[in-house]
Amino acid sequence: MPGPLTKSATTKPGRPRDDEAEQRILDVTLDHLSRFGYSRMSIDGIAQAAQVSKPTIYRRWPGKEDLAVAAVARLQVSEPPVTGDDTVTALTAILTNFRRSLLRPRGMALLGTVLAEEEHAPRLITLFRERIVSPRRAMLRTVLERAAARGELQPEADLDAAVAMLVGSFYARYLAGQPIKPDWPARVVALVWPGLARTRTKAARARHSARMAGQDI
Image 1 (cartoon, rainbow, N blue to C red):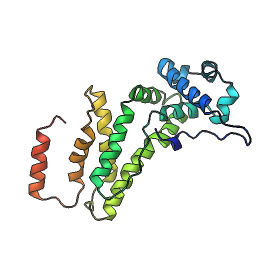
Image 2: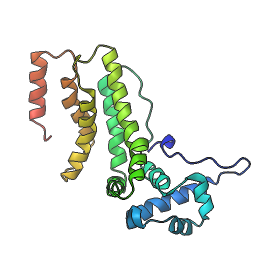
Image 3: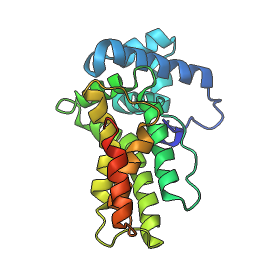
Image 4: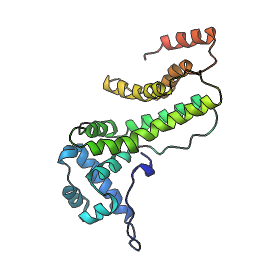
């Protein structure tokens, strides 16, 4: 998950950052999240396992919630800049990276760990949504807004619903116990895009329906 989402606190002037220690802290945090869950994870335990002091952790992250979100954010694959005017290609590229992030070891399981704490740690969920969920949704919406500005979309196109469908299909597939295969991003975009695009002929709709009818959606 991209660097800007981790929001590590800056070190004091003149104090060199120990990058190796920081990576060790984040690795241990991911391990403790997986094994103990957020509620049982502690800064004391992480400091001891990472062989650092508690002040070393607090210089980088102001609290347990920030540390947990920074650790989960490491599972995200770095996002390449979205360039070009081919909307379908851009949407597929974003979702391909999303798939890679979700399928990394512990990726989906840790998302479940975070969401399970909604009642007990509301700030954790707020940070998770702000730093991890919202940026990717914003990327998809930006691509669609650019397409709308170029006149590619129907005037009544529902961008919020489109973004929810594109992202939500991955969670639905996983929860159903079905594999999220490499072609899934392209398949989802192929299904959603005709419902947004301005130019849709009857023949094009018929070809699309026939193609999708032969696939296991």
